[in-house]
Amino acid sequence: METLLLLTHTDPDGTLGKPQLEALHAARQLAVGLGNAAWHVGLVGETTEVAARQIGACGAARFLEVQGTEFAQARYATDAAAAEALCRAVSATMVLAAGTARWSRVLPGVAQRLGGRADTHVSGLSVAGEAIQVTRWYYRQRMEARLQRAHRPWLLLLDPGAHPAWSGDPMPAKTENVPVRVTDAHQRTCVTGMRAPAADAQTIRPDADLLFVAGAGWTKKQADGQTHVQEAERLIGGFLSRTRASLGSSKSLVDLGGEGQAVLSFLTHLNQIGQTGATPRHPKGLSACCHGEEPHTVGWRFIDERRAIDLDPNCGWARGKADVLYVADAFAVMARLNELLQEPTST
Ligand SMILES: Cc1cc2nc3c(=O)[nH]c(=O)nc-3n(C[C@H](O)[C@H](O)[C@H](O)COP(=O)(O)OP(=O)(O)OC[C@H]3O[C@@H](n4cnc5c(N)ncnc54)[C@H](O)[C@@H]3O)c2cc1C
Image 1 (cartoon, protein in one colour):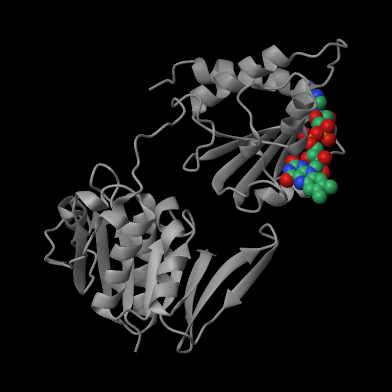
Image 2 (cartoon, rainbow, N blue to C red):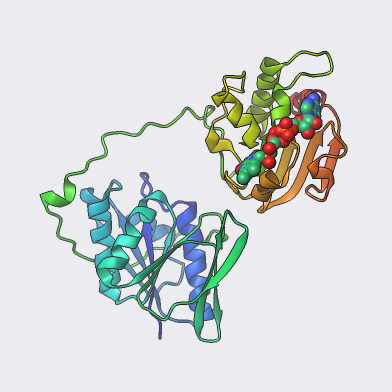
């Protein structure tokens, strides 16, 4: 019989964020699939009271906590010690955790300490007969593998965005403190501050409903024989600030910067979508001035509804890559779209 443990860590405000709630949903589903196996939650943070109350109604058999100022910040030594202590406290055979930066850094090391095995980037969990089966993607999301392991404990890092988030009313939960001895050696690393781009400069928004992808066409000579890069920046920037869409790019466009050509200032290689770029998950995608070649569109695998704007009626999007292709000048379409988005909506 399996014993499941869901490891969670609090956000700076003491709550559990969306990836943790998604992992919670997955853990509940797995426990049901295993014939209502016992499952437990381990909470790590400076204080865990708010988080425990947030998920008090989730149905876990036990809520265990490792808390204290030493566990406020992400740090390998203290996070690994906390995770190890929680796993041992319930003799967990299956350990699930959200694939946040904090857990991703420590879980494989914790598996080593426990004599277990770890798998990362898990996008699905199911029970086949009596066996637990996980799915994950390989080769830039082109091949999906189903894995089983007999070895225990088995630690799994779940990809954020792959499961629905658990929701429920707050309810007090009885927590059990798990002591962890923290020495000076555990605390040699210290986070001295956080540096993040201003909200508007942050163009990659994994939670956005829409992915907007810009292609190299924005920097090419247009019908008047001139390039219009500044106008492209203005149109794309205006659209992003109005819609809060996430910004993606083709490889050709982000590569132009390295070739010394005029490019959109807010793009980096992190925005690149495709075979050698990212494969984000969004309900909708809109591509403009991008040809829609296979190495690019393979990155659209998890975009549910796809639309594209291109001057070329024979571009890749027209060959089964998009649900809708607008054969049109993207400068004109985006200018009109921005106008419509600016107009007050009628009540
Ligand atoms: C091994 C390998 C890996 C690769 N990995 C990736 C990857 O991860 N991601 C990726 O993107 N690419 C990747 N590529 C490159 C990919 O094959 C294409 O070269 C690239 O996607 C082309 O970018 P693009 O469509 O923006 O540019 P282009 O091919 O130059 O297309 C520009 C488009 O803009 C259109 N256009 C121009 N002006 C307008 C206008 N006013 N209105 C509307 N449309 C207009 C043109 O009609 C054209 O279709 C990879 C290639 C290889 C070989």
